[in-house]
Length: 326
Image (tube, rainbow, N blue to C red; front, side):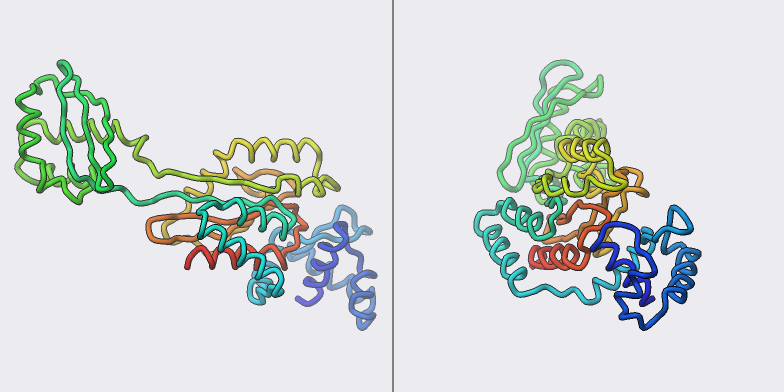
């Protein structure tokens, strides 16, 4: 695999196809160009290198870069100046709880667009739950959460439910059944225990009303998009670059990718734009590491060109994510 690593290193430096002659120069001519051509042809047959023409140089494929990334992660070296810069940014985060400095630092160090994503994944518990009758088939459910937040939600009542029913719900639910349970847990309790008539149906309607508002609060910050201008070359067209900027500006698609991670995700992700269904921007990569702390799920990452400096980008992102987990 030594030849492959040299091909990738040279490609990331010159950002263009790599010839066997250039690899031979890198190796101090310890191997001939003919020998290297044979090795590179084998790597191409194995799907690790590609070329437009048989006489042209070769570029690494996505599969080759994945192997390269695994190799880089095993080393994961940062110079002291870079680690100090990350420490300063993280201390600012801890004091101000604002990720601007963190992401600006990552974008600057990686020469990519950096992003920070965080969402609350904890469903809040209730302290009190009540129903207020408005009109036939109409009511307001009032939820008081453990942090004293009060949230009213309009809901539809079953046709036969009267104010007397709602009064009986109040006596039945509060405080013993509601306290320290989520709304979903309260409904499950009612379903499996003897309870007032129509209460389970009312709770189901209430839960439907709060579903959208009770989804996890999400926060996304993207910085350093201007760093991507250098990537407008070779196979990356201006139209692709503009499409990527529009995609980042909307944020929804990126938040969807990050919020769909499993509860026990992998510790590192890299998506190549030529392959990924949602992040489909030829010539660009999406790299990130997820983190969990208490009831918060998040991710820190970078978006950059196919030839990004993986030996710097990966340890920078992983070190900052390590700080966030502490």
